[in-house]
Structures are given as C-alpha cells and as structure tokens.
Length: 232
Image (cartoon, rainbow, N blue to C red; front, side, top):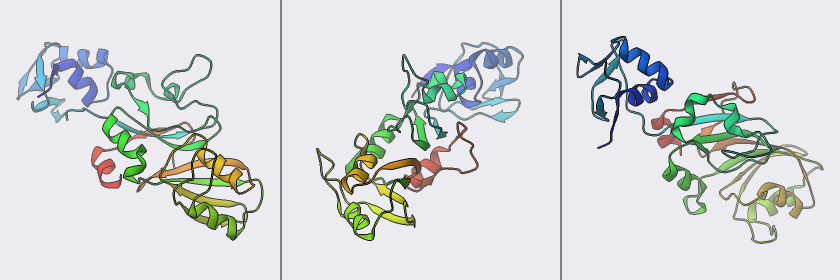
C-alpha cells in the first residue's frame, strides 16, 4: 500500500499544482472518509475515500499523455541544445517524471505517448510483444508493388533484416507502414533499402490506439488507463 501526503494525492488526482491543492485543503474543501481535513501533510493511501468539493478523487499512480508531436522537437526529457517534447507539456505534469515511449526523429511528427509507467513502455517497445506502430510515409519517388512486397517481407537495413511489416498503399508515393520494431531511423533506412527516401513521416498509432486527429500539432490530451490496457 502506498502512503502519501494529502496535498500530493489531491494534486495528482485533480491535475492541480501542489500549491493549488494546498489552498483547497486549507479552505476546507477536501474530506477524507467524509471528514474535512485541513492538514496538507495528512497521510492517506490509494484506498482512502477522498473528495474535493464533494467529488471523489481517484488515486493516480500512472499517467498517460497522447501528444501530437510537431517537427523541431527532440523526443527526450531534456536536451542542452534543442527544445524537447517535454517543453510542450504543462509544467504541472513534471512531478510525474514522464518520459516518451520510444523516439520520433526531430523532423518526424505524430503520436508520441508520454507516461511514467516503465513496464507498459517496455511492453510497447519490445519486439517480442509485437505491438504494431503505424506510420504515414511520404516518399521521394513512386513505390512499386515489388518494393512494397520487399518491405513487407523484411529488408536489410545494415545491422539487421527487418521483421515482417504491413504496408497499405495510399498513393503512388505514399504508404501506411506498420512495424513491430523500433530501430534507429528504421523507416528511413527501410526506404533506402528499396532505393527511395522519406520526405515526410508521421506516426499514426501504437497498437489499437490511434492519434486523435483533432489534436493540433503540439497539442496533447490525457488518456484513461483502461483505454490504454484495452488497446495496447
């Protein structure tokens, strides 16, 4: 059982800053087991019944954020020289120690999942789990049916031969490509293996979890853990 301070429980559960949570506690807006508590350091646990303004607050251990990553941001928690995807997230989420699940190149756009759940991140990234990641790929040159077949069967990208993939043709030079690996620059290297080049790349999904296309570039939204479990 996890014990923690009341102000942290409220801050995490209600997506508030710690300062905001403390103010609400001091104003008598928080109740523990139906009794008003004004002590910000009062000890509670994940099974405690806690309300804020008479609304039940759930214990939050893991958090999941769907970010529509724009080009120009590094998929990292920090970088000395470049802006990172964490710069796009409200500072109030910093206390969760979020990190990106996998990487998107600085010029690649689309779905980037941020979480503090290391086990889930491992499962998504492990080739053995076979969680598909789908990308929209615009190529410099038209791609033939023969080259599509090569990509699906696996191509030599230098250090490995890629596992089988799924390719859906969109136009003469655009495809949706689903892979279960995540090697460095893998999709760009796969394109090179069939004498082509990627000119635009966007991740569309992890498993059955698809990018919300209503999210503008740089925007994000919180995901429910149940939705994550069901679709990944």
